[in-house]
Image: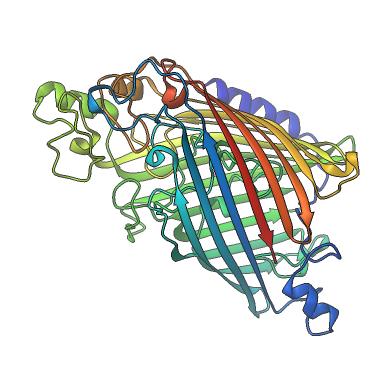
Length: 484
């Protein structure tokens, strides 16, 4: 309730300012300092960078991280398998993504993005709740390179007038003109956070923070398969400084798998968002109110506890349905009580420029916390805040630096379930000395040469897995990012 009250208060304050704010274009791919196929074709007069019929881009990102040993009073209590290892460990991800865009007719555009990933997570991606240290990590990844179709969707724009502005060529964006008043319909395969919960200072994690807590609200259990993508339909209505969005998307048949429920009236994830852009002291900003409602095949923590107390034979080792593989026979298991349940949450997302090259952000979300995490991270309530600074202040325009803080909480029933030895998709030390999970993330991004950025990152994680008996954990990382 506290986050909800803050959300409503901040919305009232910010909604009193009514000027139009422009989207940041970060970074510029087609200026003289970068390499791109589109820019090269334009230089030879073979491509129109003002009114594009098509474009093609590609990105590659490699992230390497090192976790030194850290103190822990216990790990994997009663063989419960989800503790973050307190021994020194290494992790990496490598991704390659081609982006293809095509204008089919007036207002109609097709987009596709096949993707490759190779990964090695820390502790098999277990032991962290709302602050997983690398946003690229997926629940089904492996060290072997895997190709899949991440995005394939159609977008139709209906122009309604207002102020016309130029849209620059970019991945999954065709150059042209755009009315400030318009309707946008999007259908197909994509990520929900391609449309909802976006923030220019905390969201483009291939140029910004490493930690997943800064990609979206950590407790935003948005519809997604185990790779983070889904299929569905979204509608957006823009009227000058206001925008309204809603969408329905497919969810997995059971939590955290690739198989999706394709009946949009059986299981689904609904989202709704209201945005207002503004100018304060000549600096652009935006505030967004977001709510989601999932109807999913999920178990309630209280039901799992009650089922185990009524019959200890219904424990983590005996459930014949989809489970998380715990060998702890003294613990309840959520898989015994999965059925169609409702999960809801409400949040806020603020971005605000405070100087020409400095921006700040804040996100906060309250989810009900009754059911297991279905799609995203193990967090029932969350906040994140911080700043992003561009390097023009020290004579390096395409460098940037950032400092972020994030904190997440669990519901009372979730804590009770974990303290009895239960596990979910990410959490479960066997017992828990509960405390909110917190992380500080600091990065510096260096524009090394044309189309190449190098980033150093440091994260300090406190109470990993919401357990004050373990940690703190330090994680050091480097990132190489290429765009063409």
